[in-house]
Amino acid sequence: MAASMASQVLLRGLRRASTKFLLLEKSKLTRVNPRRWLNLQEYQSKKLMQDSGVAVQRFFVADTPADALEAAKRLNAKEIVLKAQILAGGRGKGVFDSGLKGGVHLTRDPAVVGDLASKMLGYNLTTKQTPKEGVKVKTVMVAEALDITRETYFAILMDRACNGPVMVGSPQGGMDIEEVAAKTPELIFKEVIDIFEGVQDDQAVRMAANLGFKGPLERQAADQIKRLYDLFLKVDATQVEVNPLGETPEGQVVCFDAKINFDDNAEFRQKDVFAMDDMTESDPTETEAAKYDLKYIGMDGNIACFVNGAGLAMATCDIIDLHGGKPANFLDLGGGVKESQVYQAFKLLTADPKVEAILVNIFGGIVNCAIIANGITKACRELELKVPLVVRLEGTNVQEAKRILSESGLPITSAINLDDAAKKAVASIRKK
Image 1 (tube, rainbow, N blue to C red):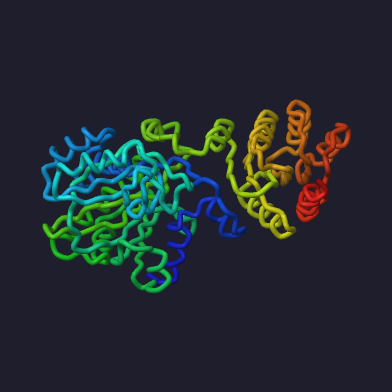
Image 2 (image 1 turned 90 degrees about the horizontal axis):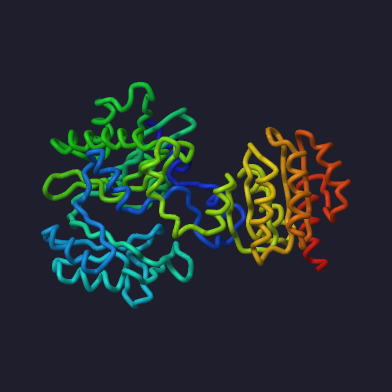
């Protein structure tokens, strides 16, 4: 396999490049809270793997120090790892407001687990990926600690270039895989999966060999690879990333840590999986937006953006920044828009106290601009909009939409293109 191809696959698929990530990279803006779709706690992902026959560490979940202590005793392991469960990375280097340092602790004394859990549960853990105040820990995972002789990387993900799933692996696991792809692309291996045939035995064995597993471990790793693909299909995943897929001194292949991303459109048939979603760590505005099939991203700034499409959202935020403004947030209404959605969008945007102006930027393909215009006028009247509103509409029924806005009698500023809209939105704040 060509190294450059592997590198491209990783850069596309393994950076977890959500709309939020791309937006922040392009606009260099500060995100207030981490954006997530369905995102499971570590123990929930491990349970899904366990149910599919994937080898994971033995573990229990506890929500009281007494339960954590009991779990440690039940494990009867040589060494125990206690891990705080929050939806953020960097837990090992995090700090609790109880004074405890580190959200991950190893111990050979089960009696210590209860004391450690008492300093985790009910306290906020702050890491490099949490808000400044941290996130309250409500559960901990008590697991058997296993030594790792060697770490590898393995993932299954959807790749547009291949029109389906691919396996990507590297013998260099337990580290930033993008860095591996950039510095040593020859250590990245890819196998395209036929969606009708699934992972073939020879593919699984070849990937296991490329990951550096030898002898009996090669067959064991190949079996784990096939089981991970079964999980991938079973839960309608878009990505199953195992880092590390490790080898123990006892000659076992174990999935030590995994990240599973799901297809939100499969919620109707994955009700048990989506029922695991803990919304307590979600931004309340994002949760409310999702009720109306709207996607909300919050940022530091004072100009709210109402758009249709992630690409248009990034362009809108960039050009506002170019003209000296700062987006406060953006709300993406997608394609199947209704007037009621527009109303709810304005309600959410104006609820942000930082918002001093609103920029609507709609490029109507499947979106009917007239519906947007009717929704805008309705929202302005019923919500008694008090901040400047700049509207740029283009596409389907745009002339009718412009007529609706001009005859509304509302103080709406029209713009002829995106550049014009951004300039007017920034100027409207400077005039205040």
